[in-house]
Image (cartoon, rainbow, N blue to C red; front, side, top):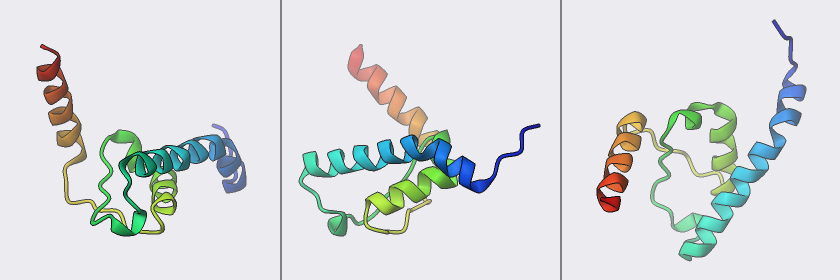
Length: 88
């Protein structure tokens, strides 16, 4: 068992959070969409269940609330199936 303080966890995950913020910024810039123009932000995939990941994405999109209407696992499976079909 390893005891970790919140401050230690935040310091250890800062590179991950900075990377998420940078990636979201690049995606928005490439698409030409401003955070205020987003109608919904839906996170999918196992890692997106982490509160730290959710907070980083929320901050990167200007504090918009994140949607949770979709089944994350189903979205990943459908996306993988579509990619596989495109590669065949």
